Image 1 (cartoon, rainbow, N blue to C red):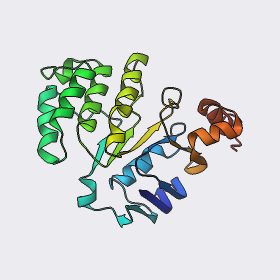
Image 2: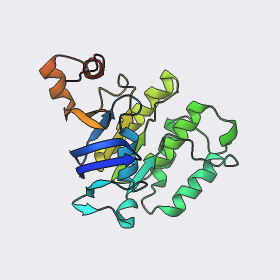
Image 3: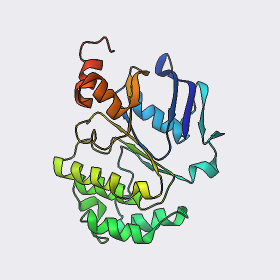
Image 4: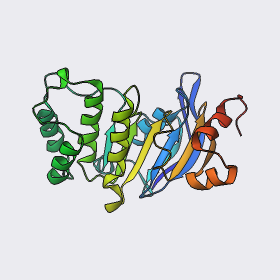
Length: 234
């Protein structure tokens, strides 16, 4: 479980997160949803300990974040983090060196499932193929927590569908916790368990996705429109 306890993050005078308290459950797919600048990526970076909170604390399984805990987290950043000289196999060898939870059988299955080849040169493949390659490396680990920061951004609908299929392919077998940030809600609303709507660094709505949809008789897309469309929120 990931716990935010009264977490505030400031960049100068700007509050990227404003007194956030939330529990992100184990073995679930949790969507951090909202427009750009709402605080989604900031939450991911705080979980990864890439940034430090200005106030409050973040716990994972009731313990402060440490190097030992971070070894069990797979992180897929929005930016392209491959070296241009790499082939997919080079990137795989690089990641495999650092993480004991690498699963070669799973890697080979996903390589085929995502229609990738090990000898593909990173600098020559399409943006969609690079997105799938990043996903391949994240999900080939049996990490306890997988953090996906805007994995659907700027790619075609067919690649988006493949990414969503990969997300749900094996994760329930090992009770992985998947946290995904996105403003592309339509593609993931059928697979996420819990949802957190963020607006200007604050949580405006959170809960079990299907319960929220049933209570308001709205899709997650329409819930988001209601939260942000009129500027008032819920």
